[in-house]
Amino acid sequence: MLASAYVGAKATGLTLPSFPDPSLFFVAVVALDVYCRFASPSLVSRAAPIFVYSMIYLVATSLAGAFASYATQRLAMPLQDELFLSLDRWLGVDWLAFVHYIDDRPVLAEWLRKAYASMAIQIIAPVFLLAALERIDELRVYLLSYVIALTATIVIAALLPASSAVTLVDNSMFHELRFAGRTPLDHLARLREAGPLSFANSGIGGLLSFPSFHAVVGALTPLSLRSVRPVFYVLCLVDAALMVGTVTDGGHYVVDPIGGIAVAYLSYRMAQRIESRRRRSIPCIGDTIGYRAERLMIENAHPSPLCCARER
Image (cartoon, rainbow, N blue to C red; front, side, top):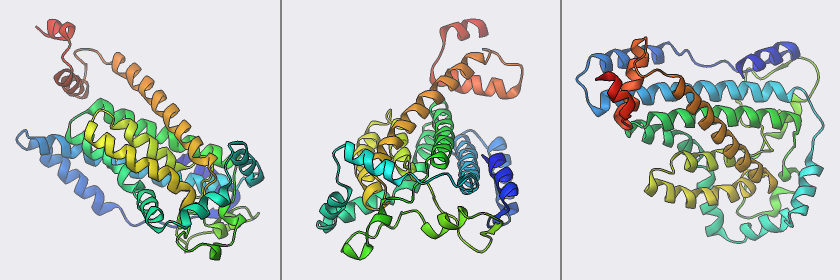
């Protein structure tokens, strides 16, 4: 994603905002790593590095994805709003009537707004819980499925861009709904213009329409935490509301969260297969310290009679 963002930005003269100096962050990571390597064994010393490295992975992936989403929108493919609107009609959904129904129910609209705003927490939740529970294999699958889903979403959105359903209506028609998560249309319009473009003094945000990445997260998080039953059941309730919130707060077409659910499921299944093949390729007693450590983690969680026999 970072490579595509760099090439796209160079080819189209796109300048994006710079990021803060990360040197202090890296110093803190190294200090934590040194402490955990020499500290006495405990849940904190084992789980903290896993959590920190996973967060680095998520942050790096998300930043690269933000750059890539902007760079690929410079392709300026034809907007597909008519296509998505016709798909909603094919599903039997009247988008305008649906959002007015929610707008007339303030309590429901507020609940959907809060569920929609939980996306950032839900991205981090699997990392925190799976690291604390030391379920390394499940955490690997989650991280890999996240990057697969994000990449797929960026590619599809670049080929099938849309200005979102909110552009079809006047926001003043609504009392409760503000569509705070909608695509920044001024950014989208500027990105689609030919010639050099600088966003150096602007913030960047999501530009994706189909599939909805909020819906991707809303499906991927409970999938990754389905083994943690109490959390899974709560997530099912919250994410059902989040799916609806993608329409009422994100300004998405109804087909967008459906596409997001499909992308999340396929990405998770692909990540499971990749991780399963990777695990089979690790020998019982590895040739490196890293392999030995990883094998010990796996065997402690799921003892293998064959490996135990070999070690004896």
